[in-house]
Length: 156
Length: 116
Image (cartoon, rainbow over all chains, first blue to last red; front, side):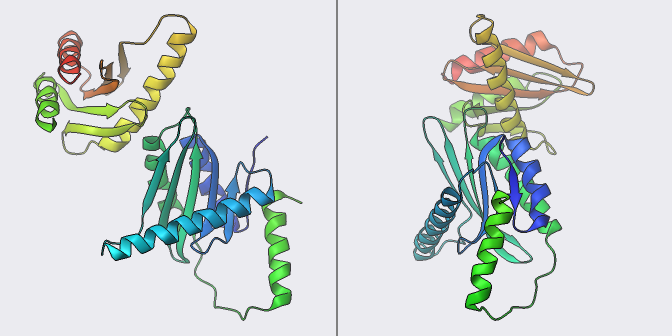
């Protein structure tokens, strides 16, 4: 059974609703630097980490091309394959910009994903708590935070 | 090309009671051309109508009836009509409940052939 899991609990309900409505097979919510916030459909940690890193890299390189073209910031990138489509979008929340990487199959479409994504981004912005004050990053905290995030994402 | 699409849509929206017509990419659910009254969310109707058409197609093929040619969804306050154009695009119409469906269907099939 595929599951939706979140490091940040406030993202869980909007993500579950988005996945149900858009019929997305995989969904990954990350910060723009690739830190995972929530996921749906992934079963292995290594896949989540790879997808998060690749999504952030694609968004960063596309943003750079957009900057060279003097266009407004990166918003959406879509790829239509033979069996699967990929939708990558950047959107704003009170806690800063986030990325959503969505993989859909033949039972959905780019139009459907795009349609429900607009609502998803609004739901997340509404559910997002106020930003927390920045804490100093310590090596000990980093490993603990990483383990907690993996436990939250995969229930281990 | 855009003029051809617009002319095809205009012939459909001239039917009394039609509130909007759209050409939608059948697989993607994205709007190719539209002629809509204010207040109709074209992208939402396009995505949902394409999804509906895809499911009908699957059901129809499973039943060995071939491709569905025309979809007529009657709701309490209006109609959604969809016709599969020979080009693979979907012609979607949003209309009032008391529309002459026969006339709308005829114009939709003609418009579908015109954009092939």
